[in-house]
Length: 86
Image: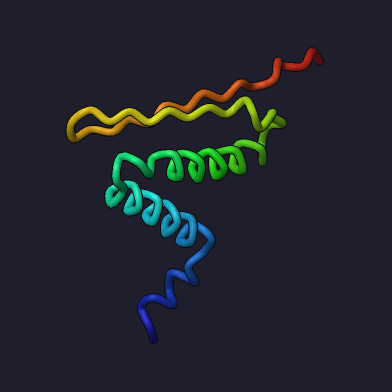
């Protein structure tokens, strides 16, 4: 009996984790000039995830990357629609 078979097959989370790691690796290898491509890809991924739960305007998703020394920060601003009255 295979020990891995006890835990079942790898699900979609493995694929998502792989994609996230690829994004992080691309970021680490990127020059300062390629931040635009990284931000564009992250914006599309985040938009797809949020749109699964909330109806949002694609133009309402703003991302900003700031590099300061060895630290990179990613700011995400998403304008959510107003709550509906019941």
